[in-house]
Amino acid sequence: MILELDCGNSFIKWRVLPRAGTGAAVASGVADNVDELIAALADRFSRQLSACRLVSVRADDETRLLCTTLSERFAIECQVARPAQELAGVQNGYEDYQRLGLDRWLAAVGAYSLEQGACLILDLGTAITSDFVSADGAHLGGFICPGMPLMRNQLLTHTRRIRYDSAAAEQAGDSLVPGRSTAEAVERGCRLMLRGFVATQLEQVRQQCGADVAVFLTGGDAAMAAEWVPAARVVPDLVFIGLAIACPVTGEK
Ligand SMILES: Nc1ncnc2c1ncn2[C@@H]1O[C@H](COP(=O)(O)OP(=O)(O)O)[C@@H](O)[C@H]1O
Ligand SMILES: CC(C)(COP(=O)(O)O)[C@@H](O)C(=O)NCCC(=O)O
Ligand SMILES: [K+]
Image (cartoon, rainbow, N blue to C red; front, side, top):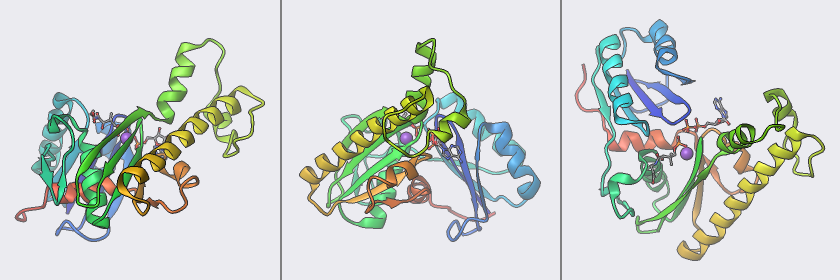
């Protein structure tokens, strides 16, 4: 079986695929750190894994350590996604293609492989990223802004009286009417900023790529944005779809 990892700034998303590297996942999860990942895998998959492919936006040292740890623990090779100027019909649009976040790159490649047409990809994680891909596969660049967790934390760490717990955050709910508590005011304020960002992305991408651009949403907070873009496709495994293209499984153990 094949282990797939998407190492973001907050979480390690993982899943295990059948041996061919295609088909439905046998198991999946979200881990806070490497120890938690290993604990989740050790019970069920201590001997069954034959390979690992991964994408990481973490520091090179941290990624190398993760690979070594997994190789030793599960006796597998880790194939790590690398930057590329072109992949599966998508041309990297950055001045220095190596600087484009690999999660963004793989999500763009994944989206274009599904759509074969113009795409807007919004990845709502620690940061929110937006990437434009034209109908002929040119990555036109994109935008980066803070995601919900960063917006909340900045307010919490840079003020003295913005304090509320996660239960209050949850209760602040989906409503966007003016808040009558700190939790409501902050949660709804940040959501409104996000909604404005998403609306602007839609406007701009339609100007650049035409009205029938396909919108893809991924990342931990994708569901929130889905409310504002009913036509969008929520594809939680978009980065993994790109990862399979970047790192095809070769040979079997
Ligand atoms: N089941 C979940 N586990 C963790 N985070 C979740 C979950 N569902 C939604 N989230 C939200 O997703 C955010 C992290 O998104 P994610 O795409 O995993 O980030 P990153 O790729 O930067 O690690 C969290 O801050 C949280 O708001
Ligand atoms: C923008 C990101 C921090 C997003 O990371 P994430 O929110 O998925 O953890 C990541 O894609 C990254 O480190 N990019 C490098 C800078 C760039 O893309 O220009
Ligand atoms: K992101």
